[in-house]
Image (cartoon, rainbow, N blue to C red; front, side, top):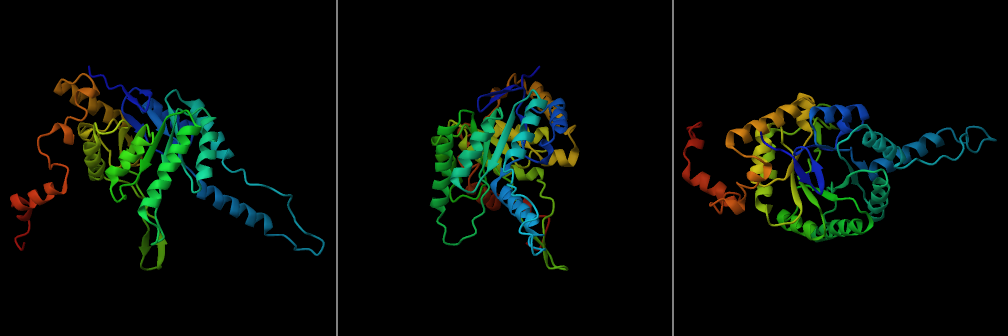
Length: 337
């Protein structure tokens, strides 16, 4: 029988399937169900500094609403400060205590000082590791790309000095040279790199002329981007590569691991198919390994990486050019081409 145990950023996992950060991981009861379904680890919902700041602003506005409604009244309520990350930390501890699998925290801050402050507080909860959620959408045209990268590298380097637990970094694919940035993260001490963050995109309702934010679930085909970069980065860095975004089935998991991923994170498939999809994915993985005669994940991991295949252009743009020049089949569906 296939052995699907693995190591992830220094953590012993019973399999390579990790539940990514989402609302599904915030309740102890859900965390327990995910563990029972077979998840090897869970990432607790991200702590966003901006969200805390908005909550604090709303609290302040609510407390000030009735100020000075009477000539002798200066303030209706006593001075109350926002709890900051305390509620998040308390609920994180509750989830940690509810399960026996590793719980990984996730954080996204704005100011460098807050990245470090939050990381220290999170480490004190007893989490197994920390995931830096480098969720950043540039909104200024004059911001130089290298400044953004250098700032994120500096955050990682400072955090590695301040905390002892393993640190993984979740990035988007929108860097000028994503492979180069992955290399920089590796050199800065990242224990793992998750490819890729799924950014929420705005939509516009043309009837109401207002912004909408529909469900942002991934599709199976979305895994192709992380597959490409797992294949390109395999055996070139010390940090582990974790594929995220588009892992919906055992076949998806197998493909990204053949490319070179060490583990996967899943979220959308849980929303779409329920927690019972976890044992199904793992059963598909084990059955395939038995069929192929693979005894462990290392027996096939990276077999289809750039390093281990003969075609030097398989994961480059030249692959696309070659398909266009040599395949007539893709045009047969439309005789007007």
